[in-house]
Length: 163
Image 1 (tube, helix red, strand yellow):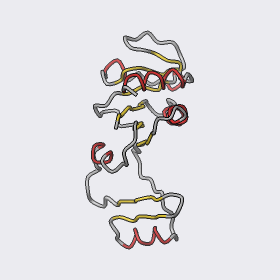
Image 2 (cartoon, rainbow, N blue to C red; image 1 turned 135 degrees about the vertical axis):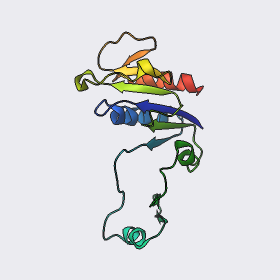
Image 3 (tube, rainbow, N blue to C red; image 1 turned 60 degrees about the vertical axis):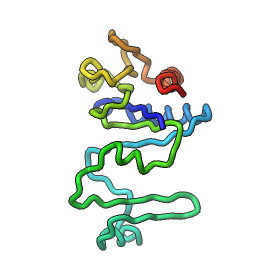
């Protein structure tokens, strides 16, 4: 599986870019899975549902399945957060895994940047950021794309990964 990341500070447009990239790249016949890092607590389960009751009762893993999809929830309890590599090993094989977040990991990335946030660029200090997708013109030593030019960003990622 090939990997490519999308990084950026809060409100930089990462999730919107990820969504557009998945649509664009899968539309070209390339299979894509995604990994999203969350810095906060999150829950995909709801109190009162059977799967939630199993988890609260102490189950380490709860697999919820139907004819449409399945979801595996794993409670870390007092375990360390798994590494990106450990999480990737749980995915079924696809052509490309797009990773949102994990900005400190070694895979190549595109940085999403919106000038209105006032946040500094990650790219100048991080060689794993191979390009920037921005809403403003930037003078950098690597490609800069318009944040909304999904086709060009997808072309770049596919070229970089050999897909």
